[in-house]
Structure formats: C-alpha cells, structure tokens
Length: 192
Image (tube, rainbow, N blue to C red):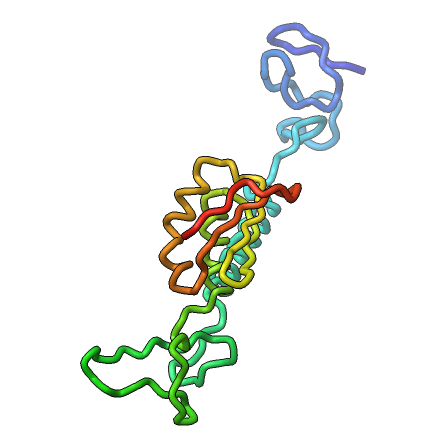
C-alpha cells in the first residue's frame, strides 16, 4: 500500500514522513496513534550531534602529545654527580705563563694528550651532521683516520661537510678522511 504525495503526485512507499522528491510532509494516513503526531520512519534517522569516535580520537592524540613532550627531555643528571666512565673530562684552562701542570686525580702528571677530544664522539657528531644533510653514512674512526661509508660519497655536499668538521676531527687526532661507497670502492681519501 503506497501513498501519493499531495503536492507533486509521486507514489511514496509507506514509512516516509516527507516526500523524497519535493520534501512536502505526507499525511499521517493509516498510521497507529493520532494523526497529528509525526513519527520518524524509513530513512529519516537523526544522527548524533557529537560523534563519540571523534572525542575518543581527540583524547588519544592529546595523550600521545603529552607523553611525547614528557619523554622528550629524558633523564637529567644532577649537577653534582660524579662523571661516569666514558664521559669526557673537562679541559683544564691553564695560564700559559704559569708553571703548574695539570694533574690526574691520583696526583701524577697527566700525559700531554689527556685533554684531547674523544675521537669516537667526534665521529658520532660527524655522522649526525651528515644525517641532517641527508647524506646517510656510517662513520668509523680507525687510528688517525676516519672512514665514512656512504652511498653519497660523490654527492657535492660531502666535501663541504668534511671541511666544516675538519677542525673538530684534527683536535681529536684524526688526520685523514676516507669515503667508501657501499660496494667497498674508495671514492676519495684526503688529508684534514
């Protein structure tokens, strides 16, 4: 049993409150209850005003952001903690005219290169600098030479990066740089 829209004459399937063509309210004929009450039926379903998934998703994103900010700083050492093994000792600034030699904690004079920078730490710094320039490489210190293994040895940005790091490498006792392709071929070797 179908109804006919009084405004446009289209046959409407029972259950619609409004005509699907002209949106005119249909008469409430043949429905249970009072004829003045309009009941929703068919496809006339109200959608919720606040979707629960959007609220849950927003809360999850906020939680991830808070955790990321809290974890970003990492653990901080107290200012008066003793240095750990592997930490670099602070350089001792001595007056060039003074006759006092730097000494080790045991009281014995230190060797002349005791204040030299750790070569492995400088190698890690060079590797990070190359990564920032998207010149992906692994840096290995071997004696007085640094080996850079990369697929970007022939990249025009590699030599300027090595020139910028040359002073730090020399202060760590590294005198030569060698760039090796991933296949093992030496692209260049140069003095710093």
